[in-house]
Length: 358
Image (cartoon, rainbow, N blue to C red; front, side, top):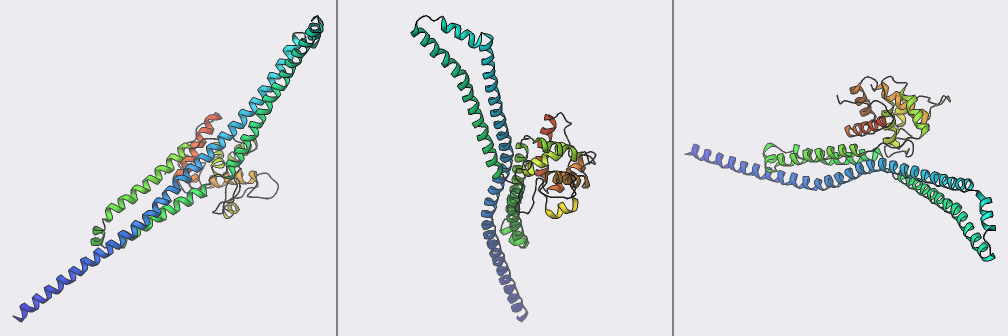
C-alpha cells in the first residue's frame, strides 16, 4: 500500500511539473510573440524607409539625367532662335535689304502712305529682331532654370550610404525577431507558431531584395562631363580588362560625377566616395602634381581604378562582379552599376561589359 501511495504521489508530482512546464512554455511563447509583434512595427517602418531610399537613389540619378537633358534642350532652342534671326536678316538682304525698303517707301506717293509704309517696315524689323531675341532670352531662362533644378537635385541626392543605412535598420529588426524565436525551446516555438513567423521574415527579406533589384533596373545613365569622361577612360586604361563605362557608372552612382561629394553619414567622401582609410591604401596621384587628394577628381578616379583592379576587376566577368561588390557590399549595387554601365557602353559604341556573380 505504501508503495502504491508513493507511486501515486510521484505521478501527481510529474503531472504538476508537466502542467507547470506547459504553462511556462505558453508564457514564453506569449512573451516572444509580443516581442516579435512589437518588432514588426520597426520592420514595417524600416522597410518603408528602405524602399523610399532605393527609389530616391534611382530618381536622383534619373532626375540628374532629366535636368541635363532640359538644359541641353534649352541651349539648343537658344541656338536655333539665333539661327532663325540670322536667316531672316540674310533673307531681307537678299531681297534688296534696306535699299529696296527705301525705294519702296519713296514710291509710296502721299505722305500718309509713306508714314504707313514706314511704320509697317519698322514693325517688321522690330519683330525680326525682338521676336528672336525674346525666344533666345526665354530659352536662356529655361536653361538657367534647368541648371538650378539640377543643382537642387544634386544637393538633395540620396546617397549609397542612405540606402545602406536604411537596409541595415531593416535587417537589424528582422534579425532581432529571429533571435527572439531562437531563444525558445521546441515546445514554445510550436506554441508561438515560430515557423509561420520565420516564413514572414523570409518573405520580407525577399521583398527587400526585390525592391533593390527594381531600383537597380530603373537607374538611367546620365551625361558625363567632358573632364570626367577623359579621366574615366584614362584611369580604366591603367587596368587591363576594366571597361571604362563601369568606372564611369560607379562615378555616377556614387556622386553624380562629382556633384554630391559628401562626406556621407558613413564618412565616405570625394567624387568616388572613398573612406579615408581605403583611399590611403589605394591612392594614386592621377594628375601628377606630387600629392594625392581624396577630393581631387583625377586622384579619386585613378585610385578607384586601382582599387577595382586590385580586387580582380580585370580578370573577367566574375572578377569584375567581385570587385564592384567589394566597392560596395550589396548585390543590388552591382546590378545598378552594371545597368548604368551597359547604357553608357551602348551610347558610346563600346562592348557591353559583363559581370557574373561567383
